[in-house]
Amino acid sequence: MKKIYIFGMGKGKQFVERCLLKDQITCIGFVDNYRADMEKAADGIPVIRQEDVKNEFDYLIVTLMKYEDTRRDLIRQGVMQEKIICFFDFSDAGNEEYWDILDSYKWRTELMWRHYTNIMMPAFQNLDYEIYGDVKEVREQCPKIIDVDRTAEILLKEKKSLARFGDNEFALISGQIRTNYQKADSILGKRLKEVIHAQEDNLLIAIANDYGRLDQYTDQAAEDIRSYMSRDVRKQHMELLDLNREYYDAFVSRPYMIYRDKSKAGKRFEDIQKIWDGQDVLVVEGEYTRFGVGNDLLDHAATVSRILVPSKNAFSKYDEILSEVRRQGRDKLILAILGPTATVLAYDLAREGYWIIDIGQLDVEYEWYLRGVEERCDIPYKTVSEVMQYGEILSDENEDYIRRYQSEVIAKI
Image (cartoon, rainbow, N blue to C red; front, side):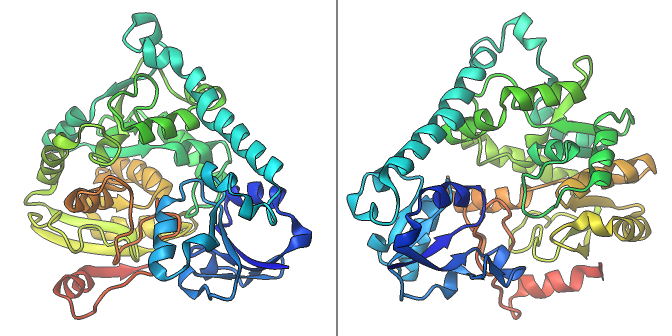
């Protein structure tokens, strides 16, 4: 019997379990940095963090569909490469050494089917919108979206508030989950649906520019958008959106990683930073989000104060969050980094005359820009929600930036 670890407990785990030769293996643990903090065991099997993996095993099967960074991290940690099986790597699926624990026929069939359903079919379904995106008849089938540069300009010059909708927000409206930091909630879904129809003059409703041509994005970003924007998803969006109104580009908070031409990123970050130049800023964020900590993103703000809220399922504390931000945020620019909860918060506070921007992943994007990386990676002293297996949050309490951050915290929920 081969002793194995299974790395990741998301959707990919289901693919792996269908192919395992279970009479040939003993699973000694699941490896999942996120769920290890919440679960003692799954199916009676321990759930551990990546750094707790011991060497007394035969294979570690990575179930993540984007496996490259994880494989590198494991090798750097000291795990022998020949012990790492990346289930979604076609070359690993062709390695006969692994066929004594994974059914080779089922494995390769699963990969071919996923390639067809996740890559070929979405590309085919989006073909008309990508090729004919500039044709009037096709353009009229897509929402009108003001580009990222103009969106940032309006936020600055007109001091508008911003509520953003991405895949997570649309999913929650229909009761689905696409994130590990906010569970489905019927009240949250109803509130998000209310926000998407909002007509407040001082509030910009922003959606991701996913509907037409994708040539401005990297190949990986375009592939991810195609995989998401299925016919069913596009239909759901169109039922919620008004093709006669103008929306704003939610990617204003993502000026760097997804774009093929990254030469514009620096100017875009500068333009966004001007929004809070000389302003008293209130940051509302999860405990380890640490927006602007360790970089110069907020250096030109007049003052910075912070309210820390739960980093997971923040909407469960929504009334407390709303009350505290009302109390602390008057006459300040409020920057909210709370996932879907920030979308609702921006709507409620904008209606009361507050200036609030649902700023999303801007800080993490800025960290990646400063590092010059072209793939998403951990930031050692911050939570990076898009890196599924982000590591332990590390920080030296004696560092100036940590002491400054701690001094800015005025409330915790």
